[in-house]
Length: 110
Image 1 (cartoon, helix red, strand yellow):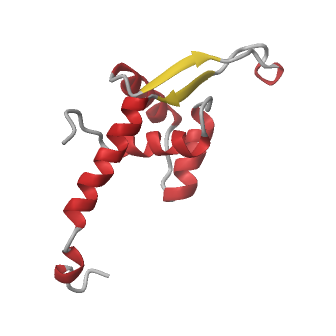
Image 2 (cartoon, one colour; image 1 turned 30 degrees about the vertical axis):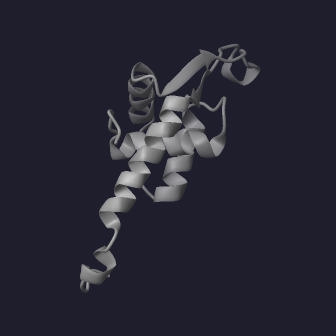
């Protein structure tokens, strides 16, 4: 069992990074979550979550190259660390275990 837990939004951010690949930054993460969930996501929420995940050792960040489109400013890029990959998989396994057998008792919740 995981010694650390992930909240729902933390899981979404980690999964978005994993889908988009190493070296992604905040805006595409927001776009990925919004397109897959249909939820509106505040950029600030993603940036706060990225800092929290980095503090937990689950992601790492670095400054990318400055770009002309940003007026010579660099973007903060992120990638999921091995601990983050492990924890997101453990979280999925825990949720899958909780869902097992519920189809039979779900009733008419469709």
